[in-house]
Length: 256
Ligand code: ADP
Ligand code: MG
Image 1 (cartoon, helix red, strand yellow):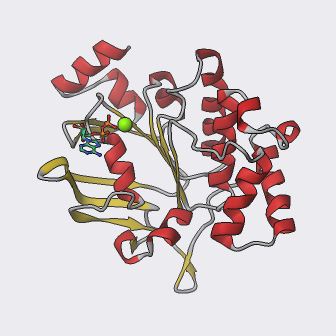
Image 2 (cartoon, rainbow, N blue to C red):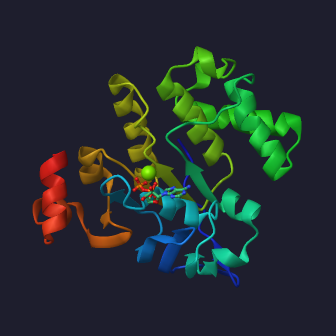
């Protein structure tokens, strides 16, 4: 795996601020606020894991970051630039998002699933898109499976194709939303190892996960959310070994 987050150049200099910054982000569905003033900083090349009960707003936060759902108020900065000022399709190539369900095109091979995104978004030629798609698939361990269609791949392999497709855009930040939740238990570890490897190689990542062991080993920072707010942020040791709030203590006693 050779891919790392590119160091962005702003005004001719390498940008040294945070890769991602949420500033008092509020999001709503209709009249109901489900994200209620979330502020968070993600440093370049680090992994932040987001944990919390179902319905606490984790997915909504990720959808707000790349504007699949427009924030109600607050701001999202990507390398210092307001995401609200970036065209949504450009934003989505700068911030990759991989979901629990991989949404691959069923009638296309693994290679074409990745290559099509490169042609559509990056306007690459067919040859170039296929060359890069091959490279990305090899990086996620699928060099031997490029000509398989999704139905002929395991769930874990399909999720790797989805990850390769997102990485092919050369995103500055990657968001992962419970990417192992739909996988058979024996396939979970391989995908988590792939994420951990990306992190070790310097990818900047925000990872929503129920896998507490993964969060403990792979995260630089762990965020605990409840009822649309961040309740605690800290190192894995702080969050898992010395939780301060009663809510986090209760959550951990239920999941660990
Ligand atoms: P999590 O990912 O932490 O489980 P979500 O962000 O999916 O939480 O949901 C946060 C809250 O927003 C929940 O109360 C959920 O029911 C509600 N919600 C999520 N998606 C929608 C939607 N499309 N329309 C209305 N309410 C939604
Ligand atoms: Mg969710």
